Length: 212
Image: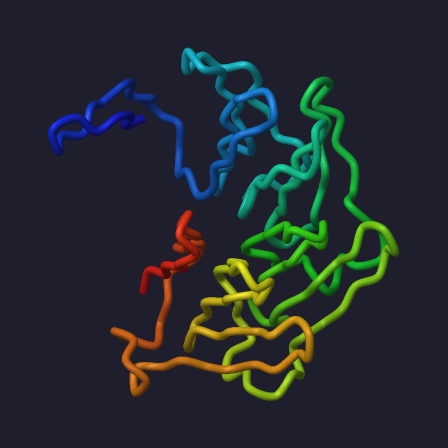
């Protein structure tokens, strides 16, 4: 764990031996860090970097591709090849986010909660999905004109409520008011068409950064 920058220098806080391949991290409402691994499930650390809980939340499936806060009492996580789950941060009780949608989002690679409370899901092969917890409805954007890739591997929201998406081929802006999709490729000034999984940042100034 690297923490703090002083005089342009990074400081090593702690080294975790044998933790495995970490692929996603998120802070819960209690200030604890949830760490998802490509094998070995989830580990939760407190502010002193001590393990609060280490567990495989789903029997037979432990590739945790994305973890995000859902509300004041739950985290949301996706398991590749399986499903999307919510877990109580106090009891660690785990349950499905919703039933009936496993086929659509079993290849989920990244999750994003927008300011309206919708859950955006980027998948390998099934494109972009939006789940509304209030209505229980799932919307697919896979067939929207403008997408040149069905692998959505990074999601961000700008100040206007548009969704910015990175993929295996191109970066896209989805206007959520009219579902218009605009693509950006190497010919448009990006450094390349292939982007990296979950390599995305929303800055305080409203800029969106992608790694490719």
